[in-house]
Length: 513
Image 1 (tube, rainbow, N blue to C red):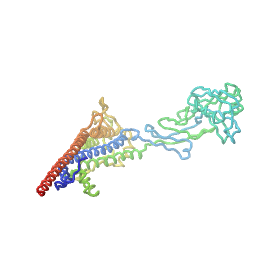
Image 2 (cartoon, one colour):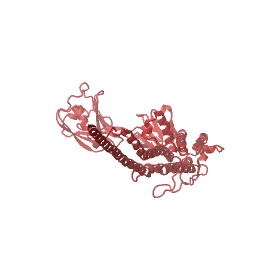
Image 3 (cartoon, rainbow, N blue to C red):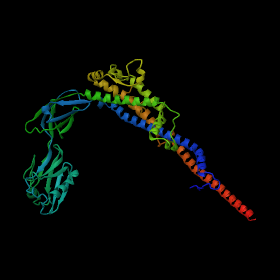
Image 4 (cartoon, helix red, strand yellow):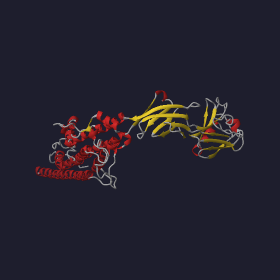
């Protein structure tokens, strides 16, 4: 801390003099601080824009996936919806579906008779120690049961080996029954249990040898249960066996919900192009595109107010919050004005959105204009739209209905790529591929390079680091300078006080004579 003096000897306001000299000395530091603040604002502006670009990149990627442009929907009679659920994949062919279900897939299981423990399920079940051999589709494991084990402990011990056996144990308190069930459905699934110590645990205590669900064999307390495959016939192509109740045939996902029992049933449905979903996807992407280019164009043309520089700390102290906000709005304006990365990226997107796609095998739909997607209609004010996209929904729907394959190719076709995985030419790439590639490699990558720290520090961050270091050094020197001023004034005051003291002594001496 500087040595504080009052200035009694000289009559000077030392603090005020030092303050004025410090203000003059601080001017270069304030200018560096203002420059540092401006650079930090610019870095933040680039980061915000990069966030917007990254978000749009994910939107653009939707147009590179054929599953989004070839979306299909499946429907069926309301009366059949509780029997079978069908979902069409993008590759499913449009048309009617007929599905005959003879049998649904079932798990292998063995179920006991009533155990008589509903009132007290925690009571001991095992009278003696026993080793149960549990066999399932996955393998065989021995389970050690201890005398005094209750139903909960027996179930837990069997289930601890489920990942190795493929068998799970369940006790249902309402029905008062113990069940062993396979973890998978299908004819390959099985459940087999045996008491290796020949105790009465299985037959008399767990009672699983008295009532068995499916095809089983009994042998002195030993039971075997087998699962069943589903049996279906799709579009009269012949009955097939399927191991689960959820499967895909002819690119249609099917879930069997109802057990036909002894009476097979037939359900009818249809697969059609989901034009509504596809149109919604395409419109959603280009709505985001319009929002993005509007924001970018605003930033590129934003007015730069060169007389409005970042405020210093002393200036902020003298202003109200509202005035500070208004000032900084002006000071932050134009931070991205004329930025080359943004302007070139925008220009590239406009160019390749309008260019035809070569190699699609179709001249009917080789450009966005062919399916009703264009920029502003030609007029004297069209240039003001700066590339905004308009969609003729009726024309787009018609194209998707008439030839969805060609429209899909128009958007999703991949182009020629180099060893680095990037497109070498854009003319043979689909619109979605072009858009995604430009946003990813030109805009997101370019903006990232302006703000990155690793693997190499950007020029913007290098400048920020330099100003931060120089300001710190200048502040340290300024502190030394202030201390030096106070030391000099202290020496002056000391000298004046000594001079005054000597003068007083001389005056006293002459008066005494």
